Image (cartoon, rainbow, N blue to C red):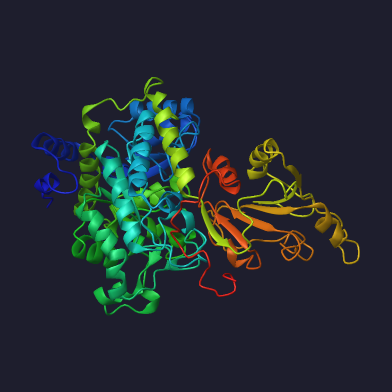
Amino acid sequence: MIDFNKFKANPFFLNDRDVEWVRGTLEKMSTEEKTGQLFFLIAYEPDREFIEKVTKNIGAGGVMCRAMPKEKVIETVRLLQTESKLPMLISANLEAGGNGICSDGTKIGSQMMVAATGKKEYAAALGAVCAEEGLAVGANYAFAPVVDIDYNFRNPITNTRTFGSDAETVLSFSAEYMKECQSRGVACSVKHFPGDGRDERDQHLCTTVNDLSVEEWDKTYGRIYRSLIDGGAKTVMVGHIMQPAYSKLLNPSLSDEEILPASLSKELLCGLLREKLGFDGLIITDATTMAGFDAAMPREKAVPYSIAAGCDMFLFTKNLDEDYAFMKKGVEDGVITAERLDSAVAKILALKASLGLHEKDNIPTAEKANALGCAKHKKIAGEVADCSIALVKNKQNILPLDRAKIKNILVYDIESGENAIGYARSSGVFEQIKPLLEREGFSVTRFVPNDGKEGRTAKYAETVDKYDLILYLCNLATKSNQTTVRIEWLNPMGVNVPRFVKSVPTVFVSTENPYHLLDVPMVKTYINTYGMNDYTVKYLVEKLLGRSEFKAKEPVDAFCGRWDTRI
């Protein structure tokens, strides 16, 4: 039996009229319509055939938009909202700015880049920009903030997506983001419960583990979730992450083999999140296309069981027709009881009502999209770039660069996807920094590997005699489906490794990963930018030349707990 009056309290705060809309809408829905609402799908473009299927055949409750040009986002959302019988939740990964839904949007910077400023007001600004630019193209739901704690520098997925490795910083910055975002009418989804950042594996590739004890979890991740829940978080996204200590505390009969990831765990969803933490909002799975979900149990069982276990919405599908059939069969067979189905759909409707979607047309327009990339938002991005660059290691005192002594600079740029054979390059940081340095009078040469076989390499003295400075630009971003965040040097024998550090002053800049000092402990001058936006390279040059001070507050241990990285 659903207590609709509970929707008047945290986190939905519905009025009587809103509650009646939820109640009346639910009563009129068929079982098939309710089943369709459980699905949260994904759109890459305004594909009319796909949208017709999503809105008419499935009747999905929501769609996430991958980043597209604004015209395509607007058209996609317009079609979805026009064709759908019920207003739709439209989401995006609005973690770093409006660029999460629209390629024309403003990128403020990664969450760690924002944390590196040391100023919570920039977390608030990030939440505001994400909401304003998301709303401008029809989004009403941010799959953010990431409230994971980056405890393990080897974790290949959390990294700069987090606000760092300090639980209090993660909490305070996340709270600011959420407050500003939700105050503008965009729901937040704090993620990824019960907390990523402990394991060194990626839940995209296997079911991962949060290995903290009950007491340790309560003081860290638990404190974050409880505080944000009390503060009005409308939704929680659950990961394909196990939390063995709590699972066994709540169900002592569980064997190790029976422990499930949060997305399929009644113990974690109902016992911990609902009961202990008191969350009454909507629970959505993380992407069910991940191996961390698929490997936990057969998919035909897992699809309906995620809802039966306590999730309210099912994010993405492997095969839409097949997963929809799995869900329908789960309802028909009683895996998802009528009561559980009604409870989940009521939460979905309550979330929509809390955003006022039932009282407006929800159609974006080109005029509204003018908020994208506006001057106010660009100013914030510039300030964040200026305040987030850290001089982590400064053992040779060559900064600021003395233009009277330094004329010729050799640049090693390390971009994703390169190799010595063919040496594929992307257009990255080098293309941005070269003209800025040349404008200051430096001669800039890009390193290109020659024959690296023993006995045939270029003479050591050629580099030592020719160049006054070696500058490394490492632009390797963490991303899903990785198993490591280490630098993979070019073969043979790491031809682009910093091997001239004792002979030529060397500066290493890591733009997207704060932990690369682990791979270059021999470097004496090391800089982290914790991510990039359109202004990062400009301010990097300003700081190299001494025209701007290094202002960042380091959000993680860039030395990775090792003694040799500090010398």
